[in-house]
Image: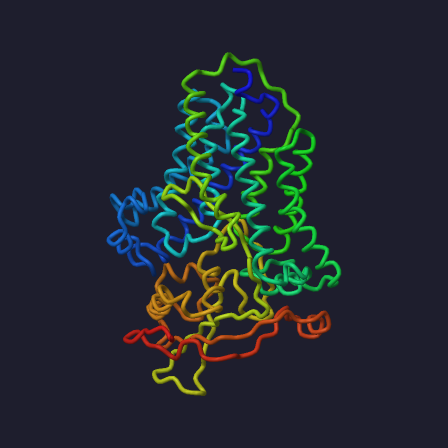
Length: 473
């Protein structure tokens, strides 16, 4: 069928597939390097405990059938290997059906991880990677031109990502409607990047322009994705520029990068598609059947998107085939950070020498400038931001974190930048304190060299020893 394929998107598909494989690689590498401390057999939220109470039908996963840390690691590194092979173009060297199966492998492996990941994997970019990764299975390889219906579905996902995010802002915090949210956001976002201090200190009129441009890109431009070329390419290009601006302003894991990858699929790039035989009938049937299924399931995110009670970052099926997205429906005005400290004193008192644990990404030492980590995702650091908002966000895992710090647990310490205690001499007590953080001014930065100024607020967790770890309510 001539209408079934779009040869003019040959190069766009190639760039999209290679870039998506790169995102997959980062996701699997993140899982491989962090899972033991987070959800391994001795992790803070162990997978074996989770699968005991959650049935397979609610959370389909290979780890519902069998779990061991060794098996989980093997799945992660297998995902890395398959992703690297896809990035190198191995799918194009295989028959069409084999290439589809190769793309299905990372999707199934990552679905297995997300569905047992609990709060560590409760982020919109996990479901977005799975939804986009599932569509990539049916995009074809060098044996066929890109199917029109799959290209449409990719734009439909991009539309929901952007338009849904725009709606959640307009319905949420009043500062989005007043164009003032960026007066605070660069300072209070979950994990600032190396340029976030400078973004925060941009003139306020420019902050207003940033918000206005964001509203235009998220609420008006998405409709242009379904217009003829070159308008659709211009719309996708504007989205890419906006996402790159967000990449520069903070550490948002691979959320911005997967959105950029999606936008690439809508670009009309110069193509030199080879002459190909007719598209196999079985492939057309499979693609059309999957498209019909996904369009039917799409009722749920559309209903949510137009609802006054719109929710964000929710999956409507256990396979994460269709999801709703959005971010920062509300913006914090004040930044709080939980600072964890330990002491070697047998009995802690006011004059005890408390030493601070240093995290890789989250603010700690006021003189330490933020680093760039995205698209790599520091999961513990992100959850520590939520813990500072309210202890209830950390109730399931914070006590376990403290316990493992008291034990000098090797896997847990690997998640941190530095522990102040040697491996053979763990702290006797650990405590946590809540601080208010604010960016310094230009003058303060010149005088002190510190990018942050912090003020003690209250005790978050009292001095706790191994025999009695308890989360402060």
